[in-house]
Amino acid sequence: MIPSGICPANKGKTQTTKQHNMAFKGAIEIDTQKCKGCSVCIDNCPTGSIQLSKMVNSKGYHYAEMIGEACVGCSNCGIVCPDSVITVYRVKI
Image (cartoon, rainbow, N blue to C red; front, side, top):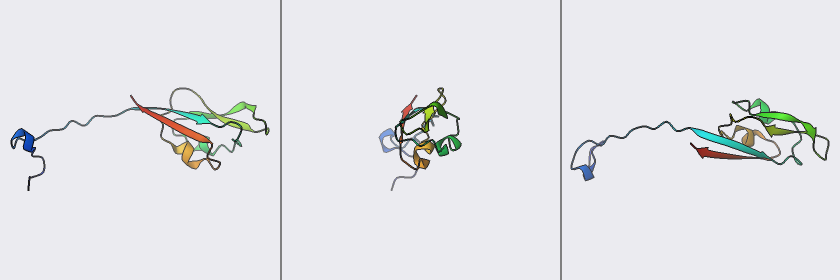
């Protein structure tokens, strides 16, 4: 059995690994025709990247929309959306 932290490829020398802080950039896509403007996504967004539009959809609802560039792609909005109209995209930067 090889002891923890020992790399056989390095002939028994201790292997070191650097921890990298990863940053993410996110974006959301909302099906505006199906959004009912319940605001649950807004209340659960940690970066304040979602607001209700001043425009209304064909059903008369003020739909949610992404604002700014602060989204980190955490998926909170997509998880809590009762109608599953939010798709979350996340890219490592």
